[in-house]
Amino acid sequence: MRKNKSSKNWIIQQHRDPYFKEAKHSGFRSRSAYKLLELEKKFKFLKSCKSIIDLGSYPGGWSQVIKKNTKNCKILSLDIKKMREIDGVDFFCCDFQNDGSKEQILQYFKAKADVLVSDMAANTTGNKDLDCIRTNSLCMDVIEFSRFVVKNDGVVISKLFNGYDFLDVKKFAEKKFEKVNFFKPESSKNFSKETYIHCKKFKTL
Image 1 (cartoon, rainbow, N blue to C red):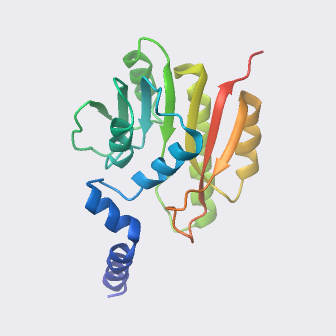
Image 2 (cartoon, rainbow, N blue to C red):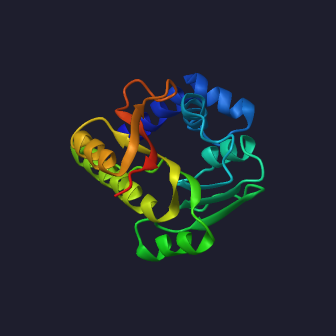
Image 3 (cartoon, one colour):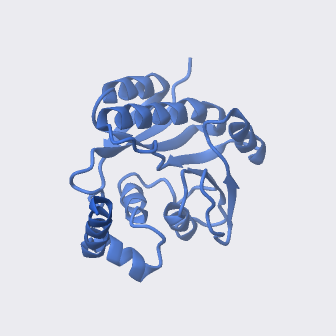
């Protein structure tokens, strides 16, 4: 009974959410599309983008935004869940954390990509501290991998949680990039600790 009540409450909250309603009206597959739109408005990384990687793309909201806001852009989206096809977007159904998946990405692009975006988060366990640690570790994995697949003057954007080991992620990124910023979109839910890291231009040795 408790589970059913919780599910009903979630459905009610979703339908009261203005971003959920707007996403339905605009044809976006998820309300998270508005997070990427806000990130684009803040940092302006899509207009001149010709190649981009969208990690954790299911159900496709971010890929839709990328497609609508780029021209002649090579788009590769990945997720462990199968995503419905989007015209002009290539999709790999795989686990990013597997080395084989990373090799697939490297082989897909003949040259390095302009931008890498990630909305990935670890599966929730019910332990908020553990979920934070796992998601922020995933963010660090994205940043580390970006060195091999993103151009020297490229952009990396990834989700992380403002909590335990947040400063570790910040220091890790600042060692690798010349510019590191953080931004929490208004479309992020108020109670959520999620934020996004924006990294630009790799440091040279």
